[in-house]
Amino acid sequence: MGARDYDIIIVGGGCAGLAAAIYTSRARLRTLLIEKEVGVGGQIVTTNHVENYPGFPEGITGYDLTQAMRRQAVKYGMETLAAEVSGLVPGEFTKVLRTTAGEHTARAVIIASGAAHQHLGVPGERELAGKGVSYCATCDGPFFREQRVAVVGGGDAAVTEAGFLTHFATKVYLIHRRDQLRAQQINQERVFADPCIEVIWDTLVTAIEGDEEVKALHLHHVKTHEESVLEVAGVFVSIGFRPNSGFLRGVLKLDPNGHIITNEVMETDVPGIFAAGDIRLNSGRQAITAAGDGATAAIMAERYVSALRASRPATLYI
Amino acid sequence: MSGSPLMVNETNFEDQVVKAAKPVMVDFWAAWCAPCRMVAPVVEKLAKEFDGRITVAKLNVDENPKVAARYGIRSIPTVIIFKGGKPVDQVVGARLEGEFRSRLNTVLAS
Ligand SMILES: Cc1cc2nc3c(=O)[nH]c(=O)nc-3n(C[C@H](O)[C@H](O)[C@H](O)COP(=O)(O)OP(=O)(O)OC[C@H]3O[C@@H](n4cnc5c(N)ncnc54)[C@H](O)[C@@H]3O)c2cc1C
Image (cartoon, rainbow over all chains, first blue to last red; front, side, top):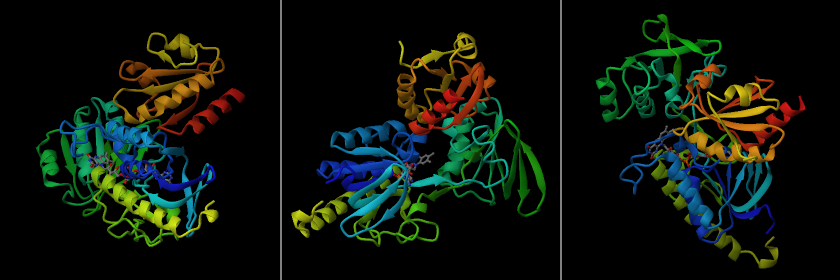
């Protein structure tokens, strides 16, 4: 085996990838986990309160949860590479991963590249990112003490962010493009009961205004077509997630939104390539479901690698 | 003490950063910020690597809100590289080691 050849390569270091790595490393398979961000952990790192991961009745931070997973995988031999995967070339015996740190090869690959927050795609958003435009209330909320902020979205993430921001901001506007929220009932009740939160219904953000920092939002009412301006110091965009699967287009079967289609044991349509976590179509989009997918994918990948080895004479094993 | 990040605050910021002879990289962070914890080991590594050429410093934004406000910090981690007392480069968000290194090298070469 060459230095850059592994039994298993895992793409993505969120809950799915880390759980898979614990299983494959512990099964004595040489495992490489490739993660494009600094440190591993994935999306859950941005939340300070994970209340539904089994085993932590008092709750745990996403950072502590995933760093514990990392230590557990490292203990059994997982190696990590800080690089972005840009392409995957499947082969029967060798799958090639193209990355920003060169090519790496493996017998089996587990894709656990998860999802990334969606952008509004309006003028000002990119220019003012980090200057009032944020995608993470728990990261940036404390900078908006005694100020007015807006949250864009209507799902569980958006309403949770709005609730969190009331600890700092004097007023939180929740801007939603429909006339009802998508969030779970319990979360909706919290929003309606909170005097600090005002919901602005049927409204789209069309531009974010500001030079050095966010000053106002330009709004469009979808029913009356009225235009208006809302002065806020910050805007938290929480309009959903898109799967990180750009590098897989044309390689694996994806749904129209870019989710990987798997069967119930995490196999994709290409033998030896498995998928786990939020990247999958119909994933539960939770840390625990991602970890469960990762474990299933690892068990199946382990079987695949054993079968592949058994089918090849040792001399061909390079 | 050399080779580890210098802790700066409202009191010593002027002397240690603004009036410093060498370029200074300041990591604006807070205890509640998980992405800051992700970059912390990178900042420590860069402090060793650039020891003697660039001062690598950390500023806690909770304890020093005035400095954070002066530089318009609205999201952390934010890293600002100062040269001659002025910000010459700024990175918002956690990034890989290589990106910080290349930006520091650019500032050294300029
Ligand atoms: C604010 C917030 C709060 C949440 N709260 C909870 C909660 O309380 N409880 C709960 O169960 N779930 C929660 N979730 C959902 C949970 O975070 C996700 O379901 C879970 O993180 C999915 O894990 P994953 O491993 O599938 O993907 P991710 O966590 O998205 O990890 C994927 C990783 O792959 C990396 N990656 C992507 N593309 C590439 C590439 N090309 N090359 C290399 N690396 C790549 C990414 O950088 C990322 O680190 C929350 C999510 C958010 C955003």
